Length: 335
Ligand code: UDP
Image (cartoon, rainbow, N blue to C red):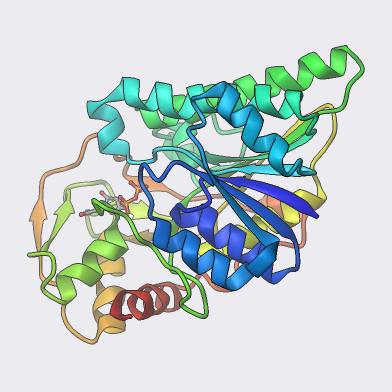
């Protein structure tokens, strides 16, 4: 199958490209390198050979996006390209509206211009905002009330894509989309060809790895007075290869003339301190840390109810133990 992947050089997009290439698909990656690196594209080229094509393009530039999509017209688009740092979105909301929503407007225009019908959109549990305790674990009908620009921008994209699908359906044309609402993602490729590679790094597990080796002074735990057993935030971590596997299954169930939302999480949460301990074990040395203040926009507990994706697809998170994810992150980091 010919597949276009936006954000192909980014953390999750690059792992998706690798899996699709390993499965024998022809992949056209798009990226503007605003938060990612050409070295990741080089790794994908090594893995995919002639089946991997890459175009550097600014998705906010509609004409350029149309031209890029027409280079290798795909059967389906996987749209990962986005900014995804919550505190940054609190500080610079317009950046998030322009980059995440603007790019998606362009992409949908380009899909129409190239007559591409199917889309998988990287959404997030942040569209649910701060769920009431009665809504945890969170299913897809948890009210979507985001509390920051990142979550707002992703919810706006979901609504826009839904309107796009509906408008085509009214005109008797087929379009369809799946929204995968990610929880926290960790780990890297099982062959360590690529891994989690952000600059600047803001995510918990990579910061722990850096701190364990002295490349980051110490982990600051953002808040120890949350209403959780150890006082630190609880998140539902999914191995990036499990997350990518969910996309592979989602491709098989994209509805036409409708959209389908599915949470991608394990149903099990881990606190910041639990993750920190797992990172120390994986790295073989203690992660230095201190307790700090809460970070803006962080809900105390985000845990998925994965029943829907379990019911609609054979997907199961088989690689998402904390031990396996932190070992995977450590191997990549050490390399
Ligand atoms: N976290 C932390 N210190 C850090 C980075 C993250 O305590 O330096 C916490 C953060 O408050 C959250 C969890 O770790 O509860 C996961 O944060 P991350 O930024 O990795 O992902 P997010 O949940 O924001 O998508």
